[in-house]
Image (cartoon, rainbow, N blue to C red; front, side, top):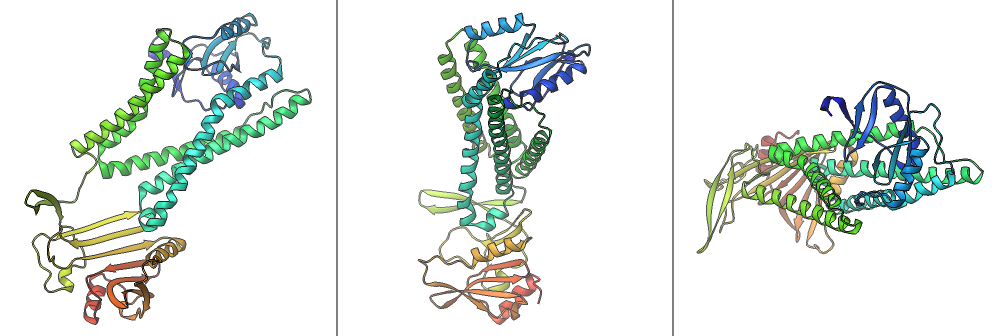
Amino acid sequence: MRKKDTVKKSMMFQYNHYTDLERKLEKYATQGLFLESIGSYFWTFRRGEPKAVHYTVTFFAEGSIFHPHPTENQEVYYDYAEASGWHFIAEHGQMQIFMSEEEQPTPFETDEGEKFENIKKCMNKSILPVYLSMLVLFGFNIWTQRTSITLDPIRYLTSKTSIYVLAMYIIVILMYGMQLVSYVIWLRRSEKSIALGGGCIEKEHRTERMVQKIFLCGMYLLVLWFLFAMGQQAGLAIVVLSLAYIPIVVFVFQKILQLMKKKAKSTMVVRVVSICVLMVTVFAYLGGIGYWAFRFDIGNKEERPYRTVEVVLSANATMDYEIFSDAIPLTAQDLYPDASHPDYSYEKEMEETIFMKQTYYYQGLYPMKNPPPEIRYNIVECKMDWTFDVAMDYLLEVEEWRTETTWEEVDATPFGADKAYHRLYDGEATGTYHLCYGNTIVSLFLEEALTDATTEIVVEKLELPR
């Protein structure tokens, strides 16, 4: 069949919303599109003359993608459907789809209680475990995010990757949670309806479908943003490999299924071999990406110019260090007259999300004996009041076991700040400060405590308000 005679479509469906699927397929038929086969990603429709046909979606608990061929009971079921005027079209696991061109076809599933039990068995066998597994998996991933947030909330809230991943986790949980709740509601209402002599609940779920589409659009946007951010940091190669991961794994899985079925292997052999090949493919692919990235330095894209210095660590060991030349407003030379070394690394990095923006500055050297002074300072711009509170709680937190460290609120006037905090170690002043300007926090990590003169320099160089 020529390629132009078929159309690929992505179809969203749930087992308990089978009537929605039937109506959608019948609508496509009036547009000249007739279901031909069901793939992993898309359903294939054959073009033809528009006409009114009927589709019915049924469920058979014995069905499985691992069966090399239809079971004996399925063959009997198909023959019974054919005798009733329904032609088998396609299957997807335990779901079978039949079509009839008769104006008023004879239903071949007349026992509503049996239909209900079939759907419930299929859901319990294949769909519910997926729903519950996804909820547990992604719920656990969100729960584990607490560790990252607790260890360094500023880094977490300024990391695009962390926020994107968290947002995707939440969307997935909401999607599967909504589908699970919808199924439970359908289950309870259908049970009551059948008990009263009626049938399974059949209604259009337009609102639910609209919400699902919104969730999916949100997911797609997040994935695109995530890949864009990844491309900026890691390069095009990593993005391409990431996009190709799922299609390649699915392709290998499908091919091994087809090969096993062609050889007429038993269901158990097909299941074991296909799952083992799938696992090997996943580990091989991810391992190959890791090796390739390490071997050819992919994923370490660095747009900032730098030079490399080889440092002798011992008689038998050397190490290369990257020396950057970023422009930073405040340098060690501004504060310490003796700060001089040809291999100083000047570094500036910035991360920003909808919650915070952090700009990190550093001037320092590779490990050496008696190094010249180093400085480090961060500017955190909190875009919401609660993120400012979270940041300050973290910055001023002192572990219980560090009894020698305390924070002291000092006069903020010399800095022109709203508030200023100075860290003490065993009662002695250190070079660590946190300065608050509205919802902006300036953190200084210096070699020694500031004097009146060096305070003036810091305020001037960092252009802090007074």
